[in-house]
Image (tube, rainbow, N blue to C red; front, side, top):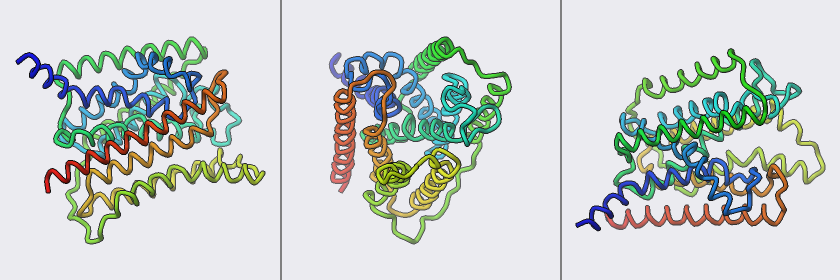
Length: 341
């Protein structure tokens, strides 16, 4: 009896625990910019802080959306709110001139760089929150749209997230000596509040399924991979040809990223309303995003003194890990489909 109860408890918390641990990996480790890149032991140890920060946020966002019967539009809006909150009010990367400087060609009002704002907020929306949620939900098809935490679990997660955010806030302020101004903090808070309000007040449209067939999961995944990879491909090709790719860090790069992401969002919105859209398509979107992050990591130069072989080992281990995870998720979907045939 005790073993049965224990197994039931472990099964209930498994998806929440999986998301708690996966989110910091896709948010911070996969891109390979940290000084601990390649130090797998230290990366595991650092999860004591990064798991509550990113995994806690992902769980809270998912619970808020699923408990209120909302779907991916709400998750994406709440992820954007988290991105602004994290970059603007927790680690201050949205405003700190050390990240871009006033010479940045995309420098805007309130000390914001268009380039870094897009990178940080889009990064949080896609890789910190949405992709890990989609991956973990794939493994629990019967619990894909229901809450995973009780009130106590949600409360504990909230406390852990708040503590992790406070630690990051204090640590970055002490290290950089920078704090946002009152107008900057108020502006960020207003945007966060507006995104949260929109997530919970936006009316859900019930549109009839489209007449056109939905593309296959491979095509959907390829579209996500292409949309998120093209800017980096352009920079890489220009550098290989000996041409300057500096314009990609200015408004042309911002505009290109916005067009590609916007086009992908529009396509996904249309495709997802067609007959035949399935969990396999959602997994493909997340897979395209993670594989983009994984290959770009090989081009990223980490902060600190990281040996090249350590960097390559770390990048390779995470790339293989992503491939194994996506394969396991795809097999889960296939098994579930065969079970219901």
